[in-house]
Image (cartoon, rainbow, N blue to C red; front, side):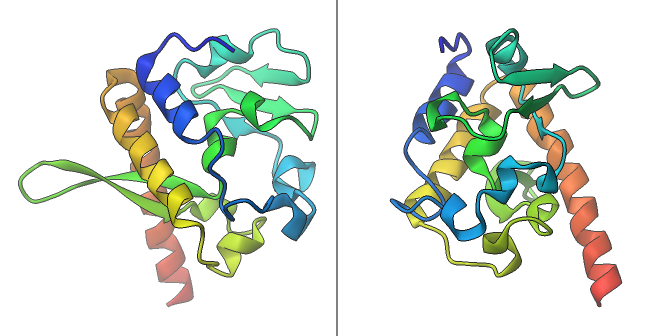
Length: 168
């Protein structure tokens, strides 16, 4: 898989071998529920990924405002899109009072229903968490990727607010 965009290439490289539980396959904990229809129909593609997966056997792309990728259920880690590589986390963009942008790694609230690591707030491998943060920083250096991160961050912040309101 040849990745032309430097920010995406760096993010992929950081997450090539880093996983939520270090050397343990987290899919063994839940029978890889995130790779099944139980988790949902698909994963969002980050900017530039649509071109990477177009025409790739075992993957289908649904076009829309954000392209969605559906897989056959099992794949080798090096073939996974970024959303799968960072799951169940997300590099959330926060802006401080001086207008500086920072990456804060959070459990993705969209993963809570499916991922037992997320639901139980399991302590994840710190190398994985750092890799997700660094990947987010790389993505912020590219305007299209940064726009996607910011838009998704705003959406996730609203989900978190709603969750707090509903759960007290």
